Image (cartoon, rainbow, N blue to C red; front, top):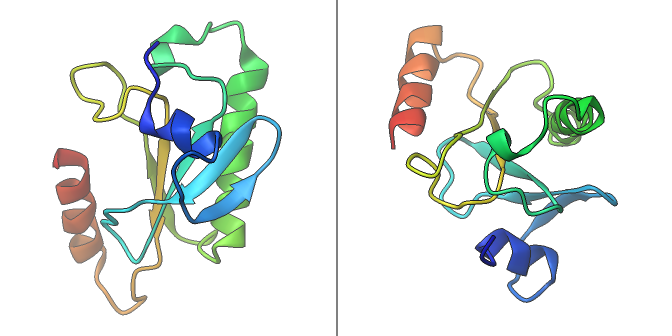
Length: 124
């Protein structure tokens, strides 16, 4: 796999606002946020796409979701947030697995408004 922007962030070659880090994952603020809180959870192992991870590697899959939950809690959005993951070289802008964690919407917004914003995010 070619070096991605995320690989460079992990190596501290490019600055980023780091929200969480452990031996396996790093979480950073998205530089083009689509929600009041928009964090990317990125594995340090440079998988290009989710399909490169073996289905038998349940530890990786479980740790990825556990990390998403930790990041959401630390960001104060654990009660209401959305996650999404683009899979495949045709739909991923960066060819390195990353989960978008979005939230922080005004609680007075209707679910329709939040869904419309989420749809824009997914389709952009």
